[in-house]
Image (cartoon, rainbow, N blue to C red; front, side, top):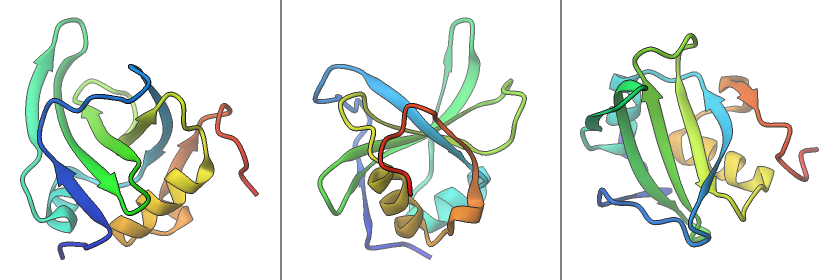
Amino acid sequence: MKTAHLIVVAPGLYWPSGDYIELAVLDIDSASLSQRLGVPLQQGEEPGLGPWEAIGAKLQSGDLIEFISYAQEPYPGFTLRADAGNRSFRVISESLAGLGLREGALLWVSPLVQDRA
């Protein structure tokens, strides 16, 4: 179920502001995320945080995002990251739509997110 709303980007994502913000956690597993994007997830290990799976994408608006999950996190799902300069709920909404998910798939939304209705 590949979606046309998200364009997968090559590994080595660079944030325009130089940093990212964690906007939300989505209730989606690795297999479903990979299937919806039509590509396998990247895998690696980060010292102190352990193994991870992730994928970067570009929204139709042009905003860059990343979905990442660490194996040792105490909660399921994938964290949605975006550029630190963009704290708009629109990024969350556009990411959900791109994956074919509804707001009910949000397990957590950062209190730093602006303009949430």
